[in-house]
Image (tube, rainbow, N blue to C red; front, side, top):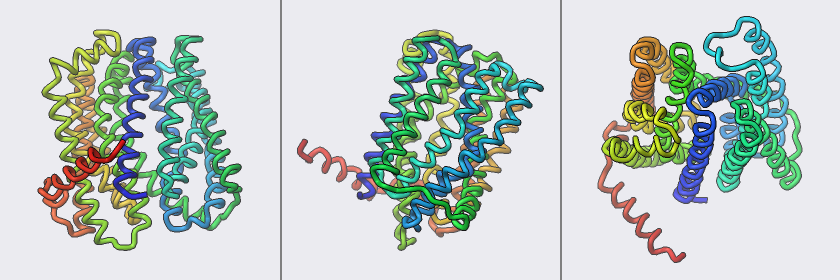
Length: 438
């Protein structure tokens, strides 16, 4: 499948996924209110970090190694099964430590809710690993189909579970149930339909862990840049502020659908590419176009703040209590726009095996995040969290840009500034689409 078609499929899939995320967020906001949604957001944040720490980078390893060793597919599947569920044993001590010490940043989350989260972790990691097996095989259609099915299951089960009992615990159980159902379907695709039977290869497992550790370390540190603030807001502010801030984050991350779609396809293409110089030119062009588009939409959101965005948030999420999310969203927009650059360049560096560069960038931005969160959140509330996040995105992008330029010897103008040829390319693509018979 061609790059343009892959990106288009992935972009529209991501757009639909965002729509489903908005539906889920809307259900939670309307039924639970700021406080209940805040509890869910903190619990879900714990789930995010637990899956990152225990995911061992297998999702990235699957894409990277299948780009080179598709003949090892069955061994890669077997290695994933063993490592994913063995790593889950490390969650047991955490549960008992929290039950004994009652960590302050989790004070609003009950013991049963934490238990649900920890049980969900290995299933989510295995699901993510297997979906990325399909991405590594460059089966973009099946990859996107499964991601959409995942979100649909989550929304449907969320509605069902919340109908039975309106509680953050019900929302967490819906996530667990949806994950298990999707895993059953993935097993059908890989084991029964494709007849790929798991086996083990300990030499390959060591290589996967080596690459995955470097990739995941960067992911963990980077996740600190745009998820740690949830815990810090929970620590310093009332739990309802977490729920309001979550609305701003969901709205802001819509813009990542453009660069995220491109980055998702760039990684496996770079991993499998042979002519590296052509890939530099290619990556530069898609980065320029993506950055220009996201900047345009960010400016549009800023202009439409009062006449459209603020009334929309209040109306859609069902309460004036969520109105402060508008201001936080505006503070997030500059960083989100700039981060679209590194969203693609970091995947290029990972695709050529330079994962360590992304780790260095993540460390720099994590220092910015933690420092500014601790300084600004107690003083400015959720707006301080948004400012800190924007600054960390900028820090990550600047360091990633430096590493990319040093590796490819590209000029910064070729990466950031839209060219006439780009506009012609967009125009030609649009005209081609419009002329295409339905």
